Structures are given as C-alpha cells and as structure tokens.
Amino acid sequence: MTTATQLRRADLCCVAIAECFRGDGEIVANPIGTIPRIGGLLARASFEPDLVMTDGEAMFSNTDGVVEAWNPYRSMFDVVWSGRRHVIMGGSQIDSLGNQNFAAIGDMKHPKVQLLGFRGAPGNTANNVASYWVPAHGPRVLVPQVDVVTGIGYDRAAAAGPAATRYHSVRYVVTNLAVLDFETPDRRMRLRSVHPGVTVEDVAAATGFELVVPDDVPTSRAPTEAELALLEQIDPAGERFAEVPDA
Amino acid sequence: MPSSTARSSGNAGTATVPDKRATIEEVVGELRDGMTIGIGGWGSRRKPMALVRALCRSSVKDLTLVSYGGPDVGLLCATGKVRKVVFAFVSLDSIALEPHFRNAMQAGAVETLQLDEGMFLLGLQAAAWRVPFLPTRVGLGSDVLDRQREEIRTVVSPYVDPETGAAEELVAMPALRLDVALVHQNRADAGGNAQFLGPDLYFDDLMCQAAQRSFVTCERLVDTGDLLKEGSHHTLRISRLWTDGVVETPNGAHFTSCVPDYERDEAFQKEYAASAKSPEAWQQWRTAWLDLDEDGYQQRLASR
Image (cartoon, rainbow over all chains, first blue to last red; front, top):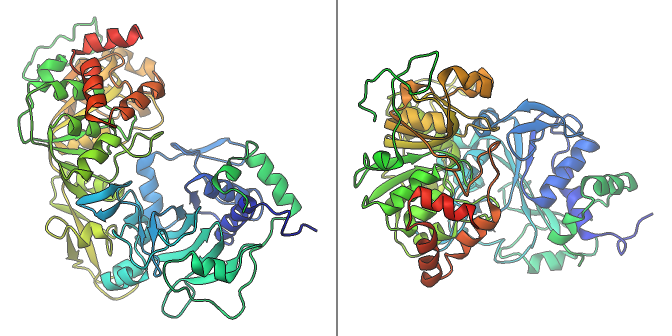
C-alpha cells in the first residue's frame, strides 16, 4: 500500500488528468502540455484504450507510436467542430465560471503583457469538451474575472445563446493541488477532490474567488502500481517532476 | 514575370507551362503601401523568409498582415512595415511567444484583428469562394466577438434546426480578402505549380486562393515532369491557376523549418529572439542579417 508521503505530486497530477478522459471512448484526447500529455497517454494505455491521440504534429499515432492516420492542422478543425474531441488547455487566468484567458494581460488591443492570442480556445470551448490544467494553483491564475475571454465559461456561453451552449462543456480543472469541476446548479467552480497532503484550506487560500466546497471533499485517487510503471514507460526522463515538483 | 505569356519553362520540360519565374526583388516590387498580405506557413514553419527579408528592406509600409504568425510577423513589425495584424497567435514554436511581435503589441504600435485559428481558416475560405462570410459557432461568447463587434458580427440562420426547432444565431466570419499571398513550398515548376513535401500544407493553398495575386518561393525549381518524382500526387496541392510568380530561393525559409529539406535553425532563432531585448541588440542583429540581400544572407550563414 502506497502512503501519501511516498506519493509524488506529479504522478498524482498525471492520474488526475488521465481521469478526465474516463468514459470518453473513441474521440481525440488532446491534452496540451507536459503533464497533460503524459496523463492522456496514461489514460489510453490503461482504462481508455480507444482514445485517438496526435503525435504532436500532423499524425494520429497509436500506443506504439505507429501512425494511424494523417491529421494536419486543417483536419483538426473537422475534429473539433464535429465534437469528437476532449481538449485540455492551459490558462494564464481562469475564473469561477470557467472562462479562460491566454491571450493577454490587460487590454487585448494594447496589452500590458501579450500572451499567446486566442489560439483555438473560442472554437474548442464552443464545440467540444474542454478541461484545464494549472501547474501552479494560485490567486493570480484562478481569478475573479479574466482580462480577456478566450475559452468561454458558463456565463458567457449562456449570454451568447443556444448556439453557444449547445455543445459547450467545460468539465474539469486539474491543478497541482486539487481537481475542480462545475457540477453545481449555478455552474460555479466546485472543489471535487484535494490531492493527498493538501487541505481544503490550502486550496481556498490559493484561489482568487470563493469556491463551492462540499461538506465532504474526497482525496484525489492515488496511482496504482501498474499506473506508476506505465508513467515510467511514458516519461522515462521524468519531465513531469520538472513541471510539478514535490510539495 | 507574372505578365509573361512566354511558353518556355527554361528547363527541357515534357510539359509546357507559362514562364512565371521571377526574382525576389521583382516580387517585392509588386507590393504597395497599405496592401493586405497573407503569409503562408505556420508559426516558425515553412515561412517565405527570403521574401519577408526583402520586404523588410523595401520602402513598402502600412501593411495589413494575415498570418498564422511566426517570425514573419515579428520581423515586419520590428522593421515598421505593419499597420495591422490579423492573427490567432504569433509564435516561434520552440519559443512560445514571438518577442518582436510582443514588443510591438505592448508598445501599442499595431492594430489587430484577433481571431480563433479556425475562424482564420473560414475567413480565407470565404474569400477563396467569393462569399462575404461563412457561419460558425466559433467565437460565440468570447472576446473575439465581444471586443471586436465592428469587424465580427453574427447572423441568424434562415433555417430552423431540426433538432432544436430554433434558428441559431451564429458568428458570420467575414472573408479575409488578400491583395497578395506569399508562400514557400518545397518544389515548384516555372509555371507556378507548387509542391509541399513535409507533413503539413498548413493553409498555403487557401492563402493563394484568397488572394488577388500569389507568389510562391520554393527550395528548388524542377521541371513539371519531375514533380511526381519528388512526391506523390497528394503533394501537388497548389496549381498554377492560383499563382502569379515563382522564385527559387534555396534555404529561403531559413530560419524556420522546411522539412524534409531542413529543420528549423534553433540556434539562429534563439539569437533572433534575443535581439528583441533592447534597441541596441536589435540594431546589431538587423545590421548583420537584414541589411544585405538574400545572396549575402545565405553566404554569411554558410560561413558561420
């Protein structure tokens, strides 16, 4: 039996990311970033074997790295707009209703800090399931209001009308401290689980708005021995530990 | 040049095509102040850098750039050629944020139309198909729409949705009409039939189709009859219908990648990125790498 003290935070995060894809079946799992990609590969190598994943470039490749199909940039829009995809994006800012910003800090037309731009966030969030990865949970990332709405949250989708809400689904926010979701009546962000060694108070203090906190907050699932072995195979260089060091 | 109707390709070809061969300077000579210019490639991949460098050296200004942006956008901003950038991102790939573009944005030096990557595709497609817009869900609820209503509007479907019984209000992505498209391909013939040999065409074909006039640079000009010796028919995605001039520019995408001919020059790109740190650093880089013609650039590069 593994105890909390032996658990490595990065491994927990990978498992939490993998869990985002549970039940997704034969769709494109598109986790962007180091730990998201490792977590996605873990899901496919274990409990979601039918997931389709890219090689990071123009191909879909299977668990053995064998090319399955050609999927250049343009084809990814066919996938996104058909809804056959679950994306995990980053976010410089995310608010309590799931709005995301990675375009700019300040005014998008004359920013204090220019970031990525809109990338594919508006289309992703209007068309397929989206979750978010936050490697350093803090009040400057989880903010009361984002400066620019790139990925749309529940309030903005509702305000834009039925065409925007029809396929909109922001599912999870996985951080280095916790897993959050929007399974509340008013779609405010809820604490779903805390990672082993993290308290509810730790998460509340690191969040820039008031989270919905259930009476009973479970602890995030620890990796199994089999999963730990898979993580070693997927990420032998240990890049995951560089992204999320142990607490 | 483009106006030529000569029926000789120069090479001892089996096929006869118009001769659209030109020089870098001739292509840049076709560009005018205030034009809207689409630039092919993606991020720091297969950018028509030889043309971009020449454009930086030219007197042309007040350009509107339409680009899946990389160092093309950064260089043209840094050299003061740009009035407006239409973009979804401007990235160097291995360096996430284009630092010269970042400087321009943070200085408030350029206007923008900021789009989702997919809206960008739809805008080019609309221009190519000569329709005013294409409908999409993409952008709804986001600041692409809410902060840019003057330029991006919605349209109510004239059809009732069979599932919901309602008429949806969608984004009407306007056509991104280009005066000129500049793209770089691996191979081309003298008639402007162009070939990509890497894993992704990106949106180069659409750029050409969305433009009034299109100019292709290529790593190597080949005889029309040799195109299929270079790659399968799937790689022949830009026909001479869409091109007005073609220039052979070996290593012309440098320092961006142009696989399978060459990978990105990461070391060079790092130096380029570092030149955004101060006006002095930029001046130094500019003197070394922009204030010389393409032959000079390639010679200096070869002697590094």
